[in-house]
Amino acid sequence: MPPAPASEPATRSVPDRASETSPDAPWPLRLLTHNIGIYVARMPALWVEAQVVSLKRRPGASLVFLDLRDTDVEMSMSATCPTSTLDAAGPAVREGARVVMRVEPRFYPKRGTLSLWVQVVRPLGEGELLARVEQLKRTLAGEGLFAPDRKQPLPFLPRTVGLVCGRGSAAEHDVVENARRRWPAVRIEVREVAVQGPTAVQQVGDAVNELDGLGHVDVIVIARGGGSTEDLLPFSNESLLRTVAACRTPVVSAIGHEEDTPLLDLVADVRASTPTDAARRVVPDAAHELSVVSTARERGRLVLHRRVHHELDLLRQLRARPALTDLRGLFVQRVALVEDCRTRLRAATGRGLQRRAEQLRSTLAHLRALSPGATLQRGYAIVRTVPAGTVVRDAEQASSGETLEITLAQGHLGVTVDPPTGTTFTVPTAAGTSTTTTTTRSTT
Image 1 (spheres, rainbow, N blue to C red):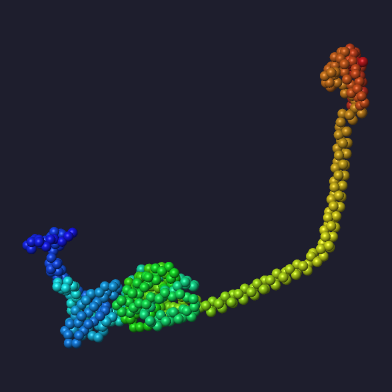
Image 2: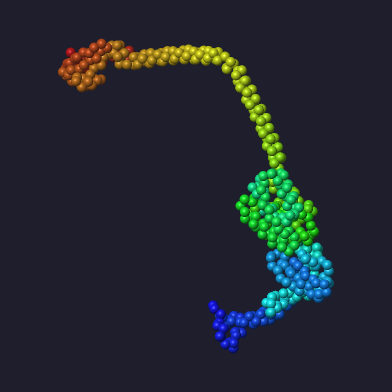
């Protein structure tokens, strides 16, 4: 909304509360700063932890001006401390030191700035710092940030190595020189940042995030030379540790010397004892790999040579066998075997046919013995009616004058039945001979 016109009366009404202001009823700036001063003045004194970024002290001055920074994020604030209060804290309070202060917030309306008035200063000693690091270590371990199963393996031959190190530091020289000595073609993306002091955490974290976002960077090395516990404290900072834990790219920690153990060593995927050791871990040794390849080729050549000689020996043994040395003899043996099989087959076939012929003759003899023709040869005849052809088995079946056909062993006879006459027949019995008179029909 446009501001109120300049001709608006000076006696306009001003809202009592900030929530009641509007484009038509704004607060004057002096009223805002006045009210902010009232709000800030109501705040009680409190204890804060910070890092001293700068300390401006003039000879003979009663006040010392400090710039304080949060230990985790990029946020700063100015503070004013009586010289006597600072002197009472001792020489440990200097630029870069971490301190705990009892401060009173103060707002200066004319400049519109907020500052802190320092009442008490206590430097954090090494023991307190280590205790805080140990507490953070337990917290992160409970969250699983140190678990081995979340560690990523390093690639055998990275396309590009990302290096986060100090500006012109010996750590950079150690990593770059040793990496190129081992694998001359290695590519290294270097990010030079502050590795100690109040801005170290922010700059190292930003460099790690930048390298993690580059698709061609396959591994990130965070390297720094040795130093005091306070100098290495940024590499035990919770904000930096969580940044490293969230990286998709494997991270190698190479901080300090063998005896230095910042928490970054536990969060990183691989811990290197020194920057030189980090170079040995991230790239292979070309000379060693060539030696391995040469050894493997020699072993393969020897194995192949032995295999070929073994197969040649087998071939010579096969060729030396009689079956292959005298092919004609093998053929003759097979011919003799075939002829023997044929002879045995003919004999077996002949014997089989002879047995079948004998069986056939025997069967024919039985058939002839049982046939009606054999019975007729013994003098029997078959009497049939004409023209029905019914066999006559009883004299009562034939009528007087009826024509019958008699089949003999040789030929047929036709007969006619005469009227019945009485005839006496003698029938043999088991006891002797008896005479019986039977009426029969005679035939002509």
